[in-house]
Image 1 (tube, rainbow, N blue to C red):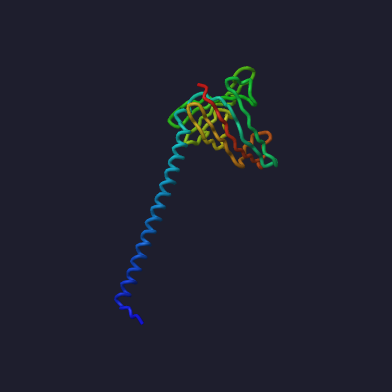
Image 2: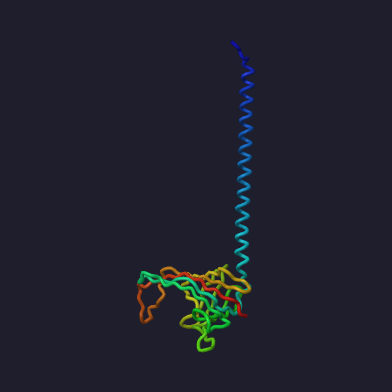
Length: 208
């Protein structure tokens, strides 16, 4: 029978313990490296996405005359089971052609974040003003109707107006509202229980 000295057994056990610690440290370093790499990849992707979004919205281009080229989306009310959907195009340079009524917006800068908007529609071989002018406030990429100088304007005051794209040639505004009261008590057909919802995008091209 072979008798192994106790010091030898201690050395072997200690060796195995040290090897185990080294392997554990190596694995933890590898996992930490992988985690750091993944974090850097995610940060780079987010930075790229944010940069792309910023490139699509240049607020310095908002002022000017914009002709409607496409309107697409839907609208519904709580009294109907089906919603109205549409998708039509226009050519503001040839307003007699196209699927729908041609319109254009004339936007003028008033202050750093406020703009006046006047809308026009093409009828009877000429451009005519559509409703009253409005004052809009810009906050980031969101527009808010702060004043309507008459009975109505192009944009509804209860709608969320989100600029999805704004370049030197293109303006895209998404219009959203959900279950809102759109009529007024003074309207002849006023119904306090009537509610409307909508989600549509209007795309314009810069004319001047």
